[in-house]
Image 1 (cartoon, helix red, strand yellow):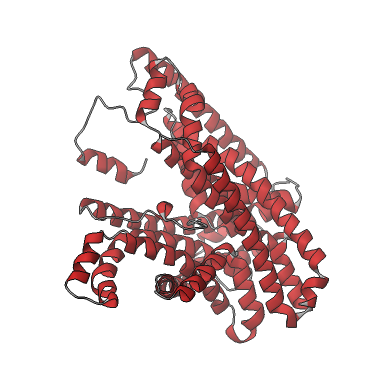
Image 2: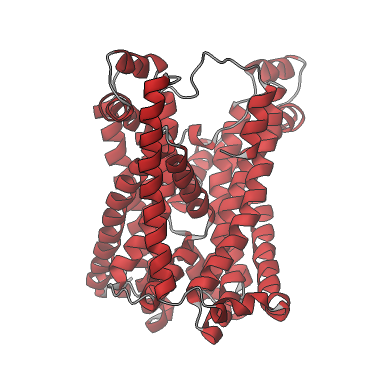
Length: 215
Length: 299
């Protein structure tokens, strides 16, 4: 117990990094995921194929392999970046594929009549998507995106092995110095993740509630 | 578009007046010209991005034959990659088998008639689902790695997490069996355990099979976390290649292709089983619709 209290500072700083990783990756993943989803439903076959290939490749590759590819691979291409940004790239490249699928299934829930009406008043594909379909699709996609972002928050733990001193890293390093306190450390850090996930879940439940529109 | 979808649409009756997507009409001549332009521009942008990446990779010598040579060498496959894949599959197989057992236990706990037991299992399942798998694996590795080696901490960590996820799938699967089945079973005098064992579970298993297989994909990907505790799985073995030949990106591409191939087979199996269910008009469990206080889906 006292180890946990003595190192509360380290652990909280580490959780701050976990949150920064998760938040930045979430932002990039949602932006990229929505673009990919728009590409996946586009009338242009090559664009559709590109987005579909992206999703199939990144969804079926282990995140750890993406970490190796971006963290150790980018420097071999003479692209220098901090460990933080390389972790963000790996996490968001992976998560974007899942966000894309969530948004795409959201698009499928939008009533046909909505898009038909938009087209009937002369909107193009881009306008239909931007002003009519996507706003409704995002609403339907909010709960699955919430669970994807919870998974993202948990997945930031992999950055531990790639130069980021985030929360899981603290279990690794503090447990080495204080083997007797392992259970306390594990309990404390796990609790931190549980709180983080509960917070994300709460935010998304609020969003869902706020954006809910009777259809 | 996958081959399966094409085959499926051929089987279905064609409805030429119906556009393929809600988002755009069956195009007329002028719109078709416009669409061709958009396709060309879109295609060019995609091709441009691909070309840029390829150029960057080529200019750093990623496509040099020396970097790809190890994968032309049968010994590398025989001594490094195939044994690594076997260990990955071993960890995945053990984890999924044990996860199903754990999922049944968690699910039974959550459906218990004793409120205390029910609450206890709700807490256990929710905590396990909110904890990173890696944290669990590291915990078991640090605590018992000396006696358990590296395989079992990995398997235990994966089992606990995926057992918790599967217990939700099981719960949804049992709920998806039509009410009448349960009512009929009770009305012929079966006990609660008989209803479960003889009526609900056999039907639920069929409905859940696709969701369980999708979870196998997740488990297979997550066995890669064994890398961090130095379990000699596929990526750990791959590391010996790229450290020796200094070809990290080619190695990562080959490893990714191996994972994608195995996962593709699993996904096809899941899609196939799901279409079988649909054809027979039975309910299926979509993992996305599983209701839970804090949902963490297959990712």
